[in-house]
Length: 206
Image 1 (cartoon, helix red, strand yellow):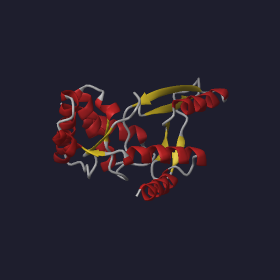
Image 2: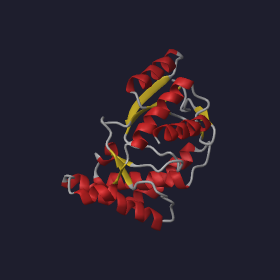
Image 3: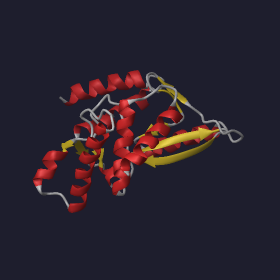
């Protein structure tokens, strides 16, 4: 089962990330497969009575946010019905870069996703290594942690402990935001995709 999931994941990643190095592809596929294989049913966890009250309340909120997103016309599919504990404060680290005399971002291109102004790593050192290489080229860089991500509907995304570390209204915002990405993603229009996801997520959380 694990080998089948990993093979499927790497196949999808190959399609999405074929512009990346094989090492990057393999590392990303392995880390994502670990997350997917660690998923636990939220409904079963809630029945177990082994959760502290804060975690229980936030998991219940995730299910409510998921249902509300469906009422808004979004398509959550089977995402956010499961939970994964991440053994660190950040899920991944995002690298962005820009020329020192321009407001335009350095971009990467991937099939399906299109052109995006960032590149994510599950390993912090690898993210800073890329930033160093880009700075050597004369670019200014930024590296930041992120607590959530979306597979754009290709897999059933779980809610992560890194996301649940945030305030309740931010958890709801993130769930709706990411479900929007799974519902609609227009290649080569990251600014539009993120702006509309924020436009939907913020009032949805309210």
